[in-house]
Length: 549
Image 1 (cartoon, rainbow, N blue to C red):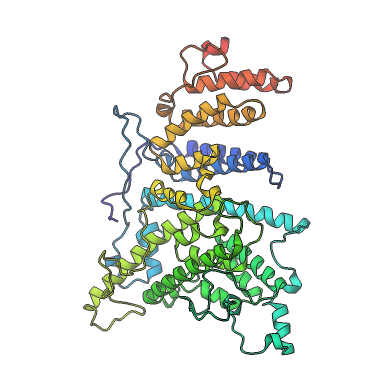
Image 2: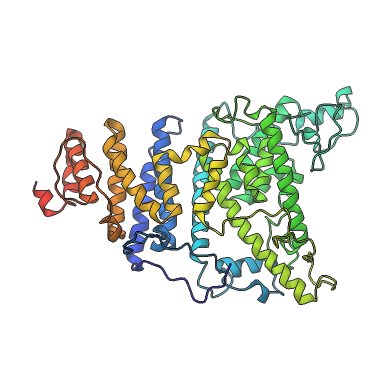
């Protein structure tokens, strides 16, 4: 990480504000049109409409940062076809100069520029934040659709019935009756105790978490209610609504869970007294390390205990055991991306992408906090000094790599291309191969940037030519509007796009990809009487020569 010498300059000419607003409105409108075709079912057409809407939404989020964010590292004037070098993460301020500031304020000032006159985050961080906000918005829409189905009736409600939104009502009833089954001491973590009485192995957590079997002492209905509650909390965390997740846990009689999730400073940060959880660097570091260990152990128990009994490539389950959801929440909050990707509740492509992006941001923030803590230690006179700030810790336990936490997770310096390669390590087929969907492939390409953008645009044109009938109508329309948008924003790139070979014998002569797709689409519209009214609109976008033809 480096401090920038000057504000980052876009590689592309900046458009006037009115033009930018028009672009963003176009991208938002196209996204909403695609998403409006979803009928809240699970068929293939709904999935395609959802993915197309998410694609246009990603372009909108990236474009809101600037044209250099949308067309990241795309170079059109290099004769060798080389990509622009990947810029490094640059801090807006040096944490060493903010020894007296609370950690929350340091993060805002050094990374995001929210507390001063700084010009805003560097381009890699701005793109990372835009991509994370985008995937949170995607999950937010999925959550709203789930809630809408909940209101009209569902055989898999999002939350337990209102009368059961307390802490394990059947279990509490058993304990109050002092039955033989409830005899003995009872700990809030009892559902995680290992069921084999012969085992004496202890886990890394304060509870006995089975490494090879999911063991729950809860009655079936309590376990189901717990799983639904934790699933809803995980939905909220994925949607960027962490405070609501904490409040939901408290309202359902489990405030101890909410307190555990706040341990790393997820709640109030940098408050007036500067005594929030994030002020205590030592406690935060310990909390994150323990959460990672517990998440990994819980995740293994969930997998081996039958959460996906048919194997990692089986069809997704509707409701996993509560252990899996709790492990997923801890993995998200502690940036444990490896534990998340191995957890069955992250078996969809969108869930895995969110885990990767969330961890990338968390790792960058953790590095800034480490630098800030080290500066405080040095300013206080070394590890033997009396530290004037709460939670300070010396670097005496650094490992050989220099990280102040031997259990720290290494990130990719906000390089989205390198980060997305982690998806290939998932044991779930839907995650590994999810990027093969043409719309998700486009999302990946624009997040990666560079040559991947041009390659995707050309592949999309080839696919639009190859598909037939209903698929052709949908994807050809998508490809036409995508290339039209690229041509209006970045014409230098549009003119470089290769034209696919046409297999229907039509002779178009020397044309650009824009002209080629418009001709194909106009021909398709003319083939259906119901679509004739649209022919003139798209024909008007052709060059004079082809318009007359």
